[in-house]
Image 1 (cartoon, rainbow, N blue to C red):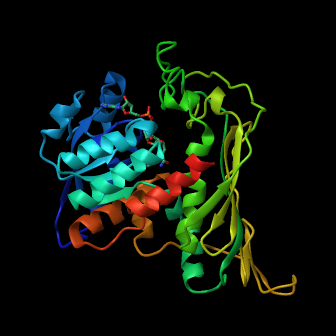
Image 2 (image 1 turned 135 degrees about the vertical axis):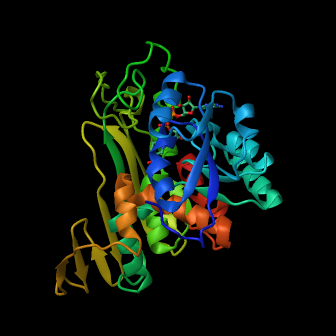
Length: 349
Ligand SMILES: NC(=O)c1ccc[n+]([C@@H]2O[C@H](COP(=O)([O-])OP(=O)(O)OC[C@H]3O[C@@H](n4cnc5c(N)ncnc54)[C@H](O)[C@@H]3O)[C@@H](O)[C@H]2O)c1
């Protein structure tokens, strides 16, 4: 059942790239957003999408897609193509929610910022990790002043090795060789920096300003696996660690760790000048003398709907903020400038 969020005003949306794009169907339904069109040139991906969203008209051809009647588009195409694809969507007069990351080179970033400013359309980055229950809870505490100011944080986005080079995201094998030139097979993991740095930016409200990193030379061998196993974006070439140190705009330091390894790590540690979160407990005050609190994070308003929409709730919130900005004009967290900040930190690393 969908909510009557914006005075009954419904938004018509298209999805370009129907793999990850399909993760938004439940959230869209819950928010009263109509997914009317979809585009993917891969038959397997298109057919899968049709099974779960039969109401959308699907095409393999992007020009056909843009002739359809919708006002906003989710750009969920190949990661290094997001800037070019977003530029096209903006030129076609659509508001854009772009999957991470925003662009692949700084020059593309400049062109994209100029295009967004020129068009006056809404641009948001679909960075969802700040909107999990725990990260929204930490953001609320930070806003209330509990942490003081950020001094140091460590956030991880590390996955256990799996191999979608040889399979679709649902595990179905693709023709050998077909996917081996896919961006997941060659992109340095530093580029995929937003799921770990993004939450720190949203919790603290700070911008990344300086970045330093060492290259890593030790690689795990990837595993090729069959149908049915859960996969999440790691291939042999990405089975390495990509840590960077980032100085934020208040002088604090963030250790941003991405990578693919033998196991997942999504740890977070967040030290403020008055309190800290160690991944499990909140520590208040200094010198180990203050209380250690076992916390039970709660959602903001609408959290139940976010939870039901799946994927930790993050997709629901980013879609909500995007629709809200289009309909009411209220600014969403990931505008083009925040999107540029978070994307550049990875490129520079
Ligand atoms: N926020 C998250 O949690 C999360 C999770 C997974 C993926 N992603 C991001 O979403 C994006 C899509 O990821 P994915 O996992 O679906 O893998 P992917 O990169 O293989 O997806 C691209 C999809 O778009 C289609 N496509 C690309 N260019 C096209 C074009 N010009 N016309 C028609 N179809 C085209 C491809 O056939 C493919 O199905 C990636 O950028 C990825 O970084 C984000």
